[in-house]
Amino acid sequence: MKYVLVTGGVVSGLGKGVTASSIGVVLKACGLRVTSIKIDPYLNTDAGTMSPFEHGEVFVLDDGGEVDLDLGNYERFLDIKLTCDNNITTGKIYQSVINKERRGDYLGKTVQVVPHITDAIQEWIERVAVIPVDGKEGPADVCVIELGGTIGDIESMPFIEALGQFSYRVGPGNFCLVHVSLVPVLSVVGEQKTKPTQHSVRGLRGLGLTPNILACRSTKVLNENVKEKLSQFCHVPASNIITLNDVTNIWHIPLLLRDQKAHDAILKVLNLQGVAREPDLDEWTNRAKLCDSLHDPVRIAMVGKYTGLSDSYLSVWKALLHASVACRKKLVVDWVPSTDLEDTTAKEAPDAYKAAWNLLKGADGILVPGGFGDRGVQGKILAAKYAREKNVPYLGICLGMQIAVIEFARSVMNLQDANSTEFDPDTRTPCVVFMPEGSKTHMGATMRLGSRRTYFEVTDCKAAKLYGNVSYVDERHRHRYEVNPDMVAKFESAGLAFVGKDETGKRMEIIELPAHPYFVGVQFHPEFKSRPGKPSALFLGLIASSCGQLDALLQNPSQPNKHIPAKISSNGVFSPKVYPNGHQNGHAYKPVKSLVNGNYYANGNGVHV
Ligand code: GLN
Image 1 (cartoon, rainbow, N blue to C red):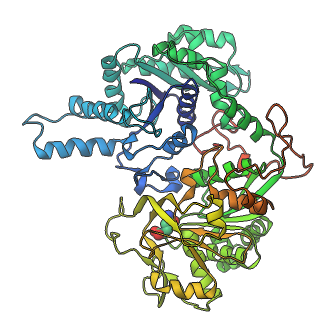
Image 2 (cartoon, rainbow, N blue to C red; image 1 turned 135 degrees about the horizontal axis):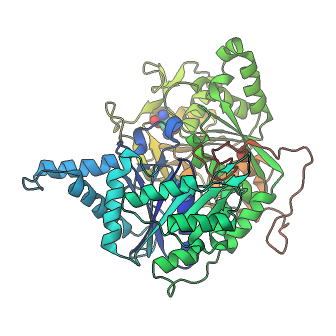
Image 3 (cartoon, helix red, strand yellow; image 1 turned 45 degrees about the vertical axis):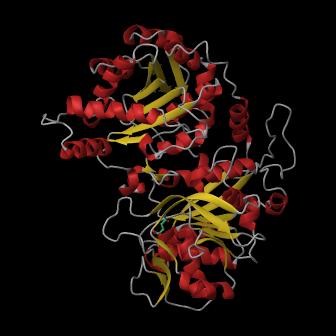
């Protein structure tokens, strides 16, 4: 096993995760099998108890692991399925060491950070690196390890120490350190400044780690003399200094690495030159260019608890993007804070109320993502009602399905006090109820989590067709509440179809309104399994229906984008229709200002594509 460690210096939010994933992509394109590990030095055992509005979304894995959103990037970029152990946290490491101590495994020794914690880290890495994640047997060739945080953080010290020991132990030829750093440009003089990188490399060396490759984030390509200077002061050959300049979408990052021969540098350090082939990135190239060329917008209103951090719904956004690209549309996501749709906002902040409703009414499709707690629920119910009544395409995910059920009960079945016991434990009409096996006292890992099977009850429905007329699908879950099984018959006779159920037939997984152009709700989270080039079926349904392509798609659902008239030119790039005053500056691509004036390439606030 060979290891590539990716560390970050100077500031956080440089897009280390995307860089690490892109390194994986290039190595995979060279014919190598790649796995990955993300180290998060925080004390939480996992991301499950962390607020998505503070830390970004909680990504859910097949095995039910609630992990850092970077693992989502790895899964999407490398098309792999990781395990919860691929996300190491300080909490997990300490817990394992303390458990061992309580069992008496340390035989009376004083248990210390060095060697016990550092050994536990190394053992964890070696154990997890060999787990196959690409569906093939046997371990991968290369494991990319991303160390979260910035060099110098107090909490990452035990990991740095462990990784220093580890690099020594696995020996030269098996370990390559890529340090992602920042080369700022001072606007006054327009000069690319190397000092922050010099300092962070010095810090890294001081902690016992020697970088083999420098990946420098900068607005523009690094000047040769800047590379020379960095090489001289950081003791890294100029050929191993890579510029990660701003690009129009993050699918360009693997191409940037390839163009600068980063793979050659890595393969040389890892002694893999004889094994690997020249990277084949045709598909990535086409996709990156295609994405740049799309101008015809599809507007999706995302109705949630939006608080300014778009990372909170990262996978949903990516899934929308994958589907939009397949439909050859430029995705425009309008974030609608659900509370702004509510009557109280009409009185207290009429402008916000008007703006929210204008966005909702201007949308081609509406999506209500997952969520917890009762804040903004009424606004989400109003959005579902609007979509249902006005025949606007709707996709409700988890909570988005539950509120659609509540709305249906209230409006169509005239059950005014219908509610979820999550929001009103004493409701007289509980149409969404707590699942019996859940825990009411503990928050961490007490939900119905991970991959579960949904069987189609009806074949003649949009969801089944979109999934390619299969009899079941495996999707990832994360919920405590479910549609009340005792009310299902009543719902069905009122016209709400439960087209997908779990293996017992008692748990509702997919709802549909047969007479509506596209009104689908799912108890699971299909966004976690969407991939670039392989969009999630129900997201594809939403986007296709939002831009008038659903009928064509349903004729040929197994081949997304075959339903689109062939406008691909010989170089594989779609020639778009240019809309003079369209929505080219849609939110989805709007840069979030970063410290490096980066536009689309991931910063901490998550403008990822
Ligand atoms: N709060 C709801 C539940 O626990 C929905 C969860 C979700 O949307 N992920 O069932």
